[in-house]
Length: 234
Ligand SMILES: N[C@@H](CCC(=O)N[C@@H](CS)C(=O)NCC(=O)O)C(=O)O
Image 1 (cartoon, helix red, strand yellow):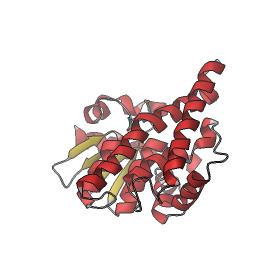
Image 2 (cartoon, helix red, strand yellow; image 1 turned 30 degrees about the vertical axis):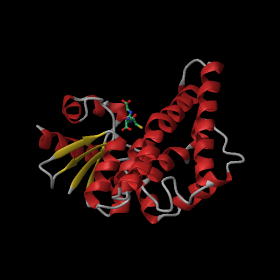
Image 3 (spheres, rainbow, N blue to C red; image 1 turned 60 degrees about the horizontal axis):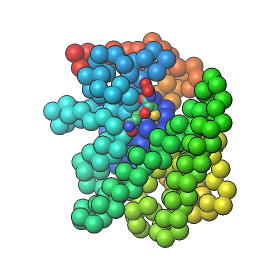
Image 4 (cartoon, rainbow, N blue to C red; image 1 turned 135 degrees about the vertical axis):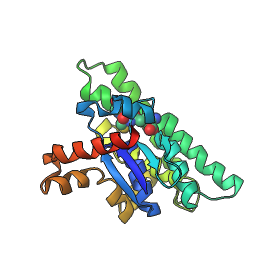
């Protein structure tokens, strides 16, 4: 069993989508940013960076993995799927995974912050991050014009990593007009049952807890889960 500490964000979805694709059993522990649960000593003991996602593999001596790219690699290697075993195939997956971790995610994240949340609208910052995000999406589009998936003909963790960010393009105010290969790939991946289940995490946990709408999360139950996690970590 794997414990997943997460929130409903692109980096969080990478872990839940991979767990769903790999059909690995896991327990979700929603982390509330509003309560700064990702900055508690207990959480920082798992991830010194104070960010989600984090997994704890209870079947591997409570081995902790933080950072979404490292989590994807760990899960793929553990399950022996979503990444080829041969050196070149593995390298192709890692190249596109690194491309996402160092580029697509950080740039789209900054575009989102500066166009949506920054108290002061700074045109230079908004344009810089949106332009760079669009450029990176164009790189994905060019690649996807050459092969079905980013690392070749097989769906891999590289696709999960980039899809979780790319499909939020509107959120960052970035246009995908003219990027037909990217659109084809985004639409196709969005239809995967495991992806649909993965992006509903942890909202489904909230919904189940509240017996109601995702926005009406039962805080008591969620707190119980986090407290439970804390007691495991203590
Ligand atoms: N490099 C990290 C970044 C993780 C990250 O930025 N997580 C965000 C949500 S997408 C977070 O936890 N934000 C809360 C905070 O910054 O305190 C990864 O890929 O896991």
